[in-house]
Image 1 (cartoon, rainbow, N blue to C red):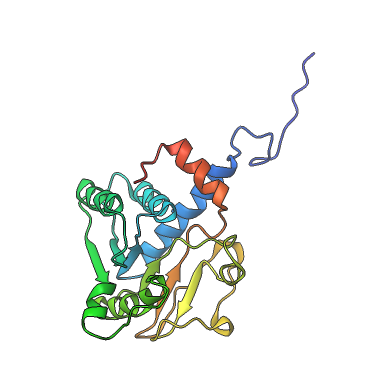
Image 2: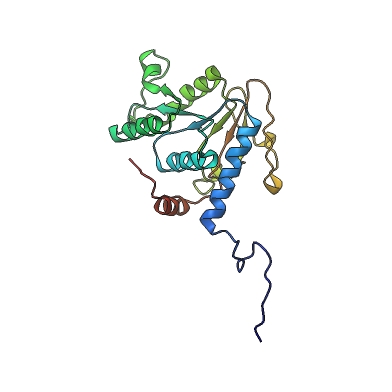
Length: 216
């Protein structure tokens, strides 16, 4: 006589259990769809790096075969490799996406920002980003930040409220129990959204390999 052992649905022995990467993908897809339902003008920050490329891949999956309901926003430091810009433009054309670009060089030319002695422009991205968010009235901004990157990132919620100056106040952040996200915000404020919060760098590379995602 054969004995059949019942397992709890969703347990590790269940045929319906998700793999580690499938669970992370499912969570990210849920977050993208939540934002589409709660906000009027969301945008995805896209730098052409591995995290933003994975984030866009997940967003496209979340709404396929419908078109992506979000625009892309690239803060161009002026120090990008040509291959990165070529990749960005090909992705935009392939999926008929709207691309907004905020250029650090424009602010330097106008005398609003100055070159740093060390030559790096990453710290100069804040003002162009903030002004583009304000001028385009984006109310949700997807970022590729992960909690494993640094201590400051670890404190972020998935929905991270920013004031009218794009400042983050930990005292104003909301609890996120049972994957329930509160996108409420006042006029002029916006919410940063991090679909990859619970991913590690290894998860990102393994997902890129599994999905055969093109990188510049």
